[in-house]
Image (tube, rainbow over all chains, first blue to last red; front, side, top):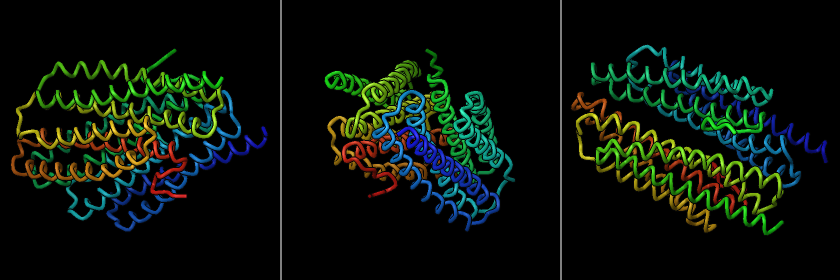
Length: 219
Length: 219
């Protein structure tokens, strides 16, 4: 029985890693679509999204099966409930990448109106937060997870800055309003990806330490 | 043991109901703050938010305890894992109410620029989706849950409409840009509340029927 549980936990880990790496890939593709103005990249995002959704359901099923059949305790129980929550976060990260792609398709059909610097930078930050949050789960590294949580403030700040810059553009040049709003919303989607990565990291801390840091709670 | 489990499941239900009703209250207060331009209402929202966060942690703890001590099977197991996920959704709904309140505080310090009709209507729709999603959980009513999922399309449509109206305002009167963007983002927050209520309803269907309808999956 024990060995069987270990094998199934290993399978769960592999599926989660696959899902995370596809979600990360889709963030990167969605921004590439916007930056290089290549419509055809959108199709790759939508195709990957289907696989990600399928993995989400598979991971849910594996977790429920593990809970029902092995009745795990302590750290194994926390591992499985964390995996359940992490896969939901990954699925939502992937949704945000689809939202970015949808908006990018609209934007690349209009003239570019400012060089894209901040949005790709914000995207890299979001991607590295996601990557580290998953690494912290795999390596049981609560310090790395905490570091991801801290980085969320930088993301919020960066998004506020993009917001202010775009508002100024809009006021100076009303013809740019539609495109500026599009970029603002892409900034919001990236900020949400960072939020979900922070949620994953909070879950990792709970899994590793056995207590929640959500809402700055300490017991 | 059995009776004990039933009692604890009952306690879990009561906490979830309390959390849901406070989240619903906060959506309503956040819009009241905007509509009646009353700054003091924001304090109630922030105070309720603390209780909601506390309930989120309490519910997590109850669920983990139930999983560890009672090793529940089948419908009880699904009830508990659903409760775990539903409390996360409620917590995020409450976050969105705080976001609406933050933005409302900025907006009510500027002159009003258009009568508020669509946003309060969208807020009522979001609230009723939340209410019904929780009712469907309590009553194990998969049909009601499905009905909530369908209403999500109406919300998206309504948000798109608000978006278009506000874009027109901004182009005609660039002095309104900041305020219009504020309202757009409030529309987005309400749309997200509807999304979370849809997630709750999908979870209810899984709990009641024992199979997932996420991503239109059927087995």
